[in-house]
Length: 219
Ligand code: ATP
Image (cartoon, rainbow, N blue to C red; front, side, top):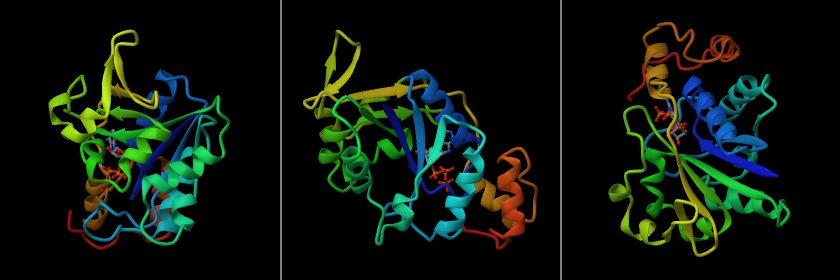
């Protein structure tokens, strides 16, 4: 089993997230990419726009028609701040020795990895796939990676990639640019504008039915 974990606020989930998961799943022959919406984000200033159960439900609706994508409520149901180390430990405990975990991180999130709770422990348990953000370039900007994180990996010439002392790989996936962000979507909704074709139709319907993001937000 090759399982990808894709964490985020998903406030709301949009086509940028979904395309990212699909391209990563295909590129690394993952059996599944599981979205893990956070309960209380530890690294985000301000509150999420929608309650955790709404964000979870929107992800459920968005992935329902794709057997290669799934969703986990592990962070939403866990009390306190959502730390990736707790989530990765949870999934690692349920896997066999031959299975592999792949943590999928947008480049913006990865560059902050050195500030995450027990990030060294995290790198012992999971491979990391860093994904491009629109405009971020074709390769991992090695010089921008915090030095402590950089030093945790060595270049492996046999596989033309980076690997740490636990044999876990650091991979970079250049994605098709889908220039959409959740904050831009919240802003549109706050102004009463359409979000059609930025999110799946089921998510758009849910946002409308539940009257989410009605108020203008600070972005
Ligand atoms: P916000 O605009 O509120 O910051 P967001 O759209 O960036 O939200 P998050 O839930 O914060 O969404 O992102 C979860 C993950 O998805 C992050 O790793 C982020 O880098 C990645 N991501 C977000 N939008 C895109 C996109 N358009 N293309 C590729 N990756 C994306």
